[in-house]
Length: 96
Image (cartoon, rainbow, N blue to C red; front, side):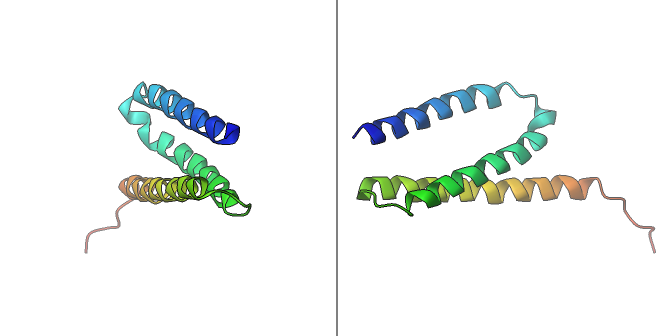
């Protein structure tokens, strides 16, 4: 039970700190920040996969699956946004 309480505390703490930090970032820095959140999402995915490597309760497995889905969604979205930004800076070829 202590482990679950600790996980919930870490989740809530990370959510609040993350929200406070991201809400203060200027709009022009959001794309580099998205690249950083891709790295954080990768770590979250690894942590969620570790939950499935050990014997856990159904609630912990559910929370791990939820973390895995949310981090995967963030990771895919971050790569899509980064790709879109990089395409904006590519040089266009000569017109035919």
